Length: 243
Image (cartoon, rainbow, N blue to C red; front, side, top):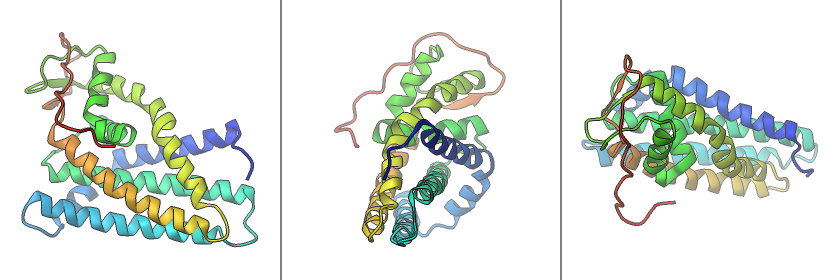
């Protein structure tokens, strides 16, 4: 397989960003409905049900995509197209998972910018999503004081999203792009890589989202304020960082 050229990288990047835009703009209601229908009486039980369902779905999709690449007629161009499609689809479903976890945590009526920020933070930083999001807030000169009770200006959130979007390509895109290309390997190798990698990724992603929404570094979004003063304190360590 030839190395990716700049046009290939741009194609993969745009597929990820388009998925983030679509999920954050139009799939919140579906996430709320999904969360309400999960089995279990308490959040940990519902999280277990949600994680198992998405892990099975995305694991099966990865294996199917890999099996398709085993066809002898599949060439380099088709392989790259398949990788872009797999990356876009996984990113979209990962976004659905993150929003469903947010709904399970009782987040109500988030703005589109807020939903986008959630997706970017969890996909980029994983188990360090809260810390990464906090750094982006400070870089955006929000100047928040301690997180409890903080109302985040919507204009600041837009700046945070602009700062995070390039990192989606560099960090999350590098990880998922490698998996997507691995899924497209022939001779059945892609089926093994795609299925197992997606299954493991979903299990980790659900845990990271659960941690993030349990300790969001703000209390609400202020859609009228422009800015506030101070510095957001970095989150206190809560044990070994998850990867």
